[in-house]
Length: 119
Image (cartoon, helix red, strand yellow):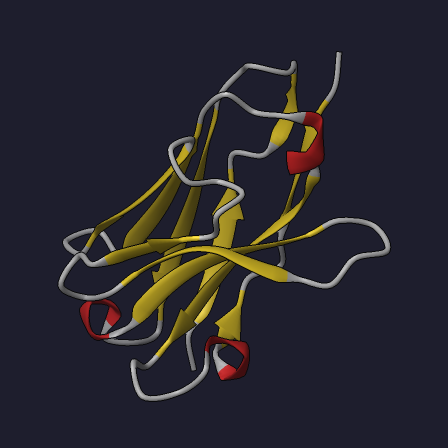
Protein backbone atom coordinates (compact mmCIF):
# COMPACT_ATOMS: atom_id res chain seq x y z
CA UNK A 1 0.00 0.00 0.00
CA UNK A 2 1.26 3.45 -0.94
CA UNK A 3 0.93 6.37 1.43
CA UNK A 4 0.82 9.83 -0.14
CA UNK A 5 0.94 13.21 1.61
CA UNK A 6 0.38 16.42 -0.36
CA UNK A 7 1.45 19.91 0.62
CA UNK A 8 1.79 23.36 -0.91
CA UNK A 9 -1.78 24.40 -1.58
CA UNK A 10 -3.18 27.78 -0.66
CA UNK A 11 -4.70 31.02 -1.88
CA UNK A 12 -3.10 32.77 -4.85
CA UNK A 13 -4.12 35.63 -7.12
CA UNK A 14 -4.85 35.05 -10.81
CA UNK A 15 -1.61 34.91 -12.75
CA UNK A 16 0.30 33.68 -9.73
CA UNK A 17 2.17 30.45 -9.09
CA UNK A 18 2.11 27.59 -6.63
CA UNK A 19 4.17 24.45 -6.24
CA UNK A 20 2.55 21.32 -4.88
CA UNK A 21 4.57 18.49 -3.37
CA UNK A 22 3.64 14.88 -2.68
CA UNK A 23 5.75 12.62 -0.50
CA UNK A 24 5.30 8.88 -1.01
CA UNK A 25 6.12 5.96 1.26
CA UNK A 26 5.45 2.27 1.53
CA UNK A 27 6.39 1.22 -1.97
CA UNK A 28 9.05 1.20 -4.64
CA UNK A 29 8.37 4.76 -5.70
CA UNK A 30 10.45 4.70 -8.85
CA UNK A 31 8.28 1.93 -10.33
CA UNK A 32 5.00 3.81 -10.08
CA UNK A 33 3.38 6.29 -12.41
CA UNK A 34 2.66 9.45 -10.44
CA UNK A 35 -0.17 11.80 -11.19
CA UNK A 36 -2.00 14.89 -10.02
CA UNK A 37 -5.76 15.13 -10.29
CA UNK A 38 -8.14 17.83 -9.19
CA UNK A 39 -11.76 18.11 -8.23
CA UNK A 40 -13.72 21.34 -8.21
CA UNK A 41 -17.05 21.68 -6.37
CA UNK A 42 -19.82 19.96 -8.30
CA UNK A 43 -17.43 18.51 -10.87
CA UNK A 44 -15.83 15.14 -11.45
CA UNK A 45 -12.23 14.51 -10.55
CA UNK A 46 -9.95 15.00 -13.56
CA UNK A 47 -6.37 13.92 -14.18
CA UNK A 48 -4.32 17.01 -14.97
CA UNK A 49 -0.79 15.61 -15.19
CA UNK A 50 1.12 12.35 -14.94
CA UNK A 51 4.73 11.21 -15.11
CA UNK A 52 6.09 7.72 -15.66
CA UNK A 53 9.08 6.18 -13.95
CA UNK A 54 11.12 7.12 -17.02
CA UNK A 55 10.02 10.73 -16.93
CA UNK A 56 7.44 10.72 -19.72
CA UNK A 57 4.82 13.35 -18.96
CA UNK A 58 1.25 13.87 -20.00
CA UNK A 59 -1.02 16.87 -19.40
CA UNK A 60 -4.65 17.77 -19.71
CA UNK A 61 -5.25 20.36 -22.43
CA UNK A 62 -6.51 22.82 -19.83
CA UNK A 63 -3.11 23.03 -18.13
CA UNK A 64 -0.63 22.48 -20.98
CA UNK A 65 2.02 25.16 -21.05
CA UNK A 66 1.19 26.33 -17.52
CA UNK A 67 1.71 23.29 -15.28
CA UNK A 68 4.82 21.13 -15.00
CA UNK A 69 5.00 17.76 -13.26
CA UNK A 70 8.32 16.39 -12.08
CA UNK A 71 9.59 13.67 -9.78
CA UNK A 72 12.56 13.05 -7.53
CA UNK A 73 13.00 9.29 -7.28
CA UNK A 74 15.82 9.63 -4.77
CA UNK A 75 13.47 11.35 -2.32
CA UNK A 76 10.19 9.64 -3.29
CA UNK A 77 8.55 12.96 -4.12
CA UNK A 78 6.52 14.29 -7.02
CA UNK A 79 5.88 17.97 -7.71
CA UNK A 80 3.39 20.04 -9.64
CA UNK A 81 4.58 23.52 -10.58
CA UNK A 82 1.56 25.64 -11.46
CA UNK A 83 2.09 28.96 -13.23
CA UNK A 84 -0.27 31.53 -14.73
CA UNK A 85 -3.02 30.28 -12.46
CA UNK A 86 -6.62 31.01 -13.35
CA UNK A 87 -9.77 31.07 -11.20
CA UNK A 88 -10.91 27.91 -12.98
CA UNK A 89 -7.88 26.10 -11.54
CA UNK A 90 -9.52 26.35 -8.12
CA UNK A 91 -9.99 22.81 -6.81
CA UNK A 92 -8.77 20.23 -4.36
CA UNK A 93 -5.64 18.69 -5.84
CA UNK A 94 -4.89 15.02 -5.21
CA UNK A 95 -1.66 13.12 -5.61
CA UNK A 96 -2.01 9.68 -7.18
CA UNK A 97 0.27 6.66 -7.55
CA UNK A 98 -0.38 3.61 -9.66
CA UNK A 99 1.47 0.77 -11.37
CA UNK A 100 1.79 1.35 -15.11
CA UNK A 101 -0.48 -1.59 -15.97
CA UNK A 102 -3.65 -0.30 -14.27
CA UNK A 103 -5.96 2.67 -14.70
CA UNK A 104 -5.00 5.65 -12.55
CA UNK A 105 -8.42 5.62 -10.84
CA UNK A 106 -7.52 2.26 -9.27
CA UNK A 107 -4.33 3.56 -7.69
CA UNK A 108 -3.56 5.10 -4.31
CA UNK A 109 -4.58 8.64 -3.38
CA UNK A 110 -3.48 11.31 -0.99
CA UNK A 111 -5.86 13.34 1.17
CA UNK A 112 -5.80 16.35 -1.14
CA UNK A 113 -4.73 19.96 -0.81
CA UNK A 114 -6.90 22.99 -1.56
CA UNK A 115 -5.83 25.45 -4.25
CA UNK A 116 -7.85 28.65 -4.51
CA UNK A 117 -7.20 31.20 -7.25
CA UNK A 118 -8.94 34.45 -6.47
CA UNK A 119 -8.32 38.16 -6.28
